[in-house]
Length: 392
Image (cartoon, rainbow, N blue to C red; front, top):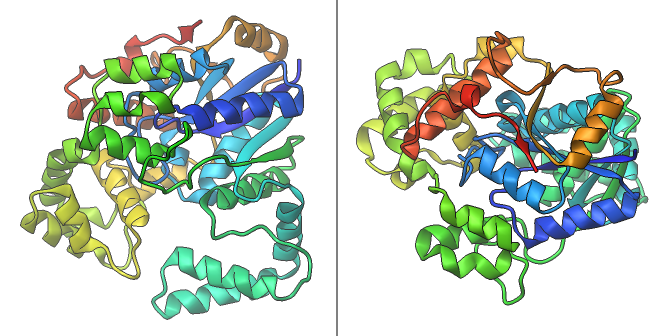
């Protein structure tokens, strides 16, 4: 059976995701589609709008055969670590292809970028270091360094100022780094830009636009942008946001104080004092964020810090989790179950269907993040221990 993997958040699942899923299957002639999906907290440092089991159901109802959770340590990491964790999971599942959406729409520029990055590594790293020393944010430092090495070649390179291109580049970089057999395939992203907050006139909108509309108006306004089943599931579940979790975050920051905050993953350069002051002074999440955001610290980078503060994810814990150590099954179709039977002896990581008494630090972190997520939507704790994989 040919297995094609995709890396997703489905926050929430919309028509653009359905297009990606169907096209990935068609382009690779796949027998089984495997989605590695972020859990309750996402790469941009946000809580998912609905819980991971609801989003897994959306995926399975729309054509995915297996939904495997991307552990917290990778789902909330910066792009290289996020991508590497996802690629390692797909490789462990014996996928033949990884298919990602991109603004580029062609693989050749990504291959050229990888080659140029390899040959100009010294210039790239030197430029990043000097930019950061000048007070430039890390993402902008990466952009400047990439532009510097692009000037050394006439080959067309991928535009790494675009968010999906950035992730695509890191997927391919991870494939090369771990010497995976995965073959990378890309398709051009359709519809609105990744960050577009306005809803378009056609039926493909960004997840950002859908979430904004949900919180501003009514769930009915996004129906035309989602597959029917996904919309029904979205309508049935409570919607999570930072506004719901901010009281818990604020309490945690004030209780911990700057000294303890300094031990949290991603918190550096004394920003713990700015977080502590902002928590004392601001009663809403938006006010808090505007007080902390600066030229050096992007909105996304700060949000990732805040997720780690909320969960209690410390630098010492992150040092223990260098790569995925299990395959957490959230859901499967009958076809997906058949595939697992076929490749069970070839898989290089253990498949977990029940959390049970596992003591893996990454799995414990996933379960803790679920419990804290549920506090914001007033659901019971312990769902990771009580919820079996979905079978369609």
